[in-house]
Image (tube, rainbow, N blue to C red):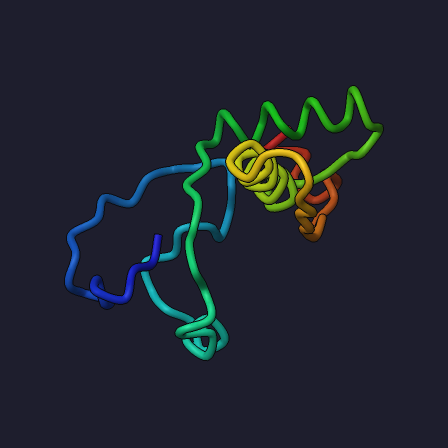
Length: 105
């Protein structure tokens, strides 16, 4: 997870195998760097939480989402619980489970 005080190359990190692809890159992309000062917080989500959410969404809501969408939903649930009733939380379901059949599903 990115932190401005941990610039690329300053932190030793063990590369781990994960079912969620492209999350937790140890480099800063140009588009992410352009958002400097606009991001208030970030949420860590485990593979287990992502898989559990994806399975819940397909079973209970009929939504066959991919790993990125599942992570977004886990984050939304956490924020909703933190804020309590009376707030609106929005996310984007940005991928389908179709592309993740061999690794995620």
